[in-house]
Length: 77
Image (cartoon, rainbow, N blue to C red; front, side, top):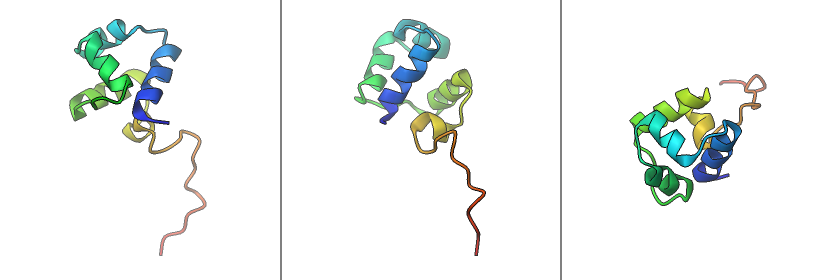
């Protein structure tokens, strides 16, 4: 899942329009649309604001790690 697809899913889960999401983090509706279309990516400050808003880590927000992933099976050298 791309960042944009994940953002759409999260926004819909919260019942937010693009405009409402943009207002909460200080960007325009057009900016949110560009993120969702993967035309541009948010700056770090906005990624942190999005992660805080959705209650996720940056890895979860960007799709690097699933919330259900456990690392307890890993052993370090």
